[in-house]
Length: 568
Image (tube, rainbow, N blue to C red; front, side, top):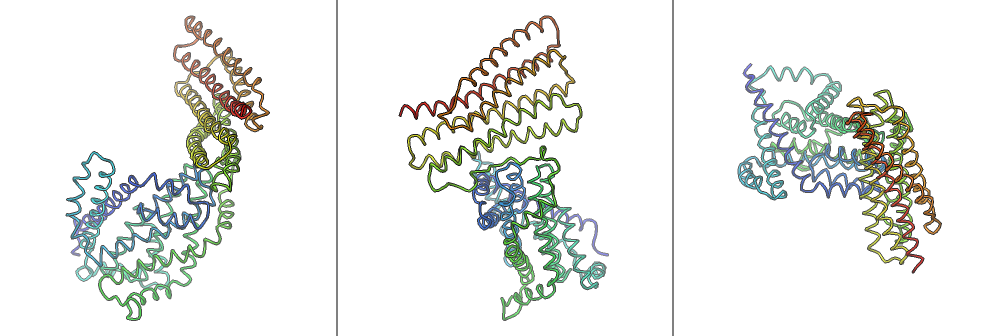
């Protein structure tokens, strides 16, 4: 056999260059347009058809359906997009990823873009050394684009020639004479290759090269492309494995859509593949007879399949949602509770005043979940088992990130409302909400800091004696009461709020903090506990006092709003 280990390593290196070029190109585009892509993803998903267009657009721009779906899983995990809204974007990503096939077939086979790769690198390299981030990213894009097609060109040259290596043809023929079984084998090969390489684009490039070199027939290449559609869902499922139940469901929907699509395609596979090939090569169709004809047919097959698949399943979005909810059930209602925007995901209402009411409901919902973190912290402090403790810590970390995101979303929504004419009372309500949303997010930060203090205690194996724990419990009860009063005030009309009770609890928290601080300094001097334990004890009760400050700030913002409206 003439094919050596050196030739094999050359092929692997060519594939590596293609992959690295694709990675550079995708990451640079995401840096240039990443924040805008995220804005588009979070804003244009209320309607399944908008979501479809969003998925296509974002995937074509960032040149990676994996990047789109992983980003999407992150949004679902953060609660900014619902499971139902994510399904349309996933379908759009499936169509958007077919652009890669067209790019490979047109630039890699029809036009020898690799001839221009070195000049593109010559332009891109100086840009990479620029101090401006945008210029640097565009330089990386040019170099990545050039490397991608250089890799493809090297791949075409390094794939063994069948005429010179008849053993390879005999090996391939061993899988090609099994009728429909051969189609299933090549489908499995496409799936496994995509899972191993973790890039459907690289597997697709390899498939295009194999078919152009005459290794496999068009039908088997088409079967590999179908397999790549299954393999590409694995990355999103891996990303979702550490997410919440909604993220897992979104990734599972991607898998179900692609598998069901391949199932119906296999029923009509031979006639469908033949029709695509005839359309491209026959005089009655595109009439192509060049070396680019078969790769073009393969790109067309991939696009038509995904467009048809989406055209079918987009009408079954609610059913897909029900199926995936049953397939991925909620095991523990408390540990897997969804926390997402509930009232302002559908955009502005008919009037600013109604939109303001919608925002108030969202703020109330936000307050409910940001205060729940305090309960998680209290459980962490007493939890003996590592498994349950780690679950609680993960929940606090997740909620803290969600609080940050939700604050931004509500603030952006209120900013949109402020651009419209509204009553004086409405303007005052809006200013009040803008202030208290920041305080609610700060409550989330305080809870996260408390959880971090408990985590340091656990890592350093520090425990407090019974007397110290009783003192902390008294502080926790006061803070809990303060948070409860804050939520009650948020649920009332501003004119009915009585600040007296909230101020009374706030004063108790402040006085008790001062008492604990004095006792703490005395205990340190008497060596009642170690200096390290004392620092953590002080951190916990001080953070609790700070949390109480933010709680009273919320109530005061509401009463200030009511007082100013009363004067006017």
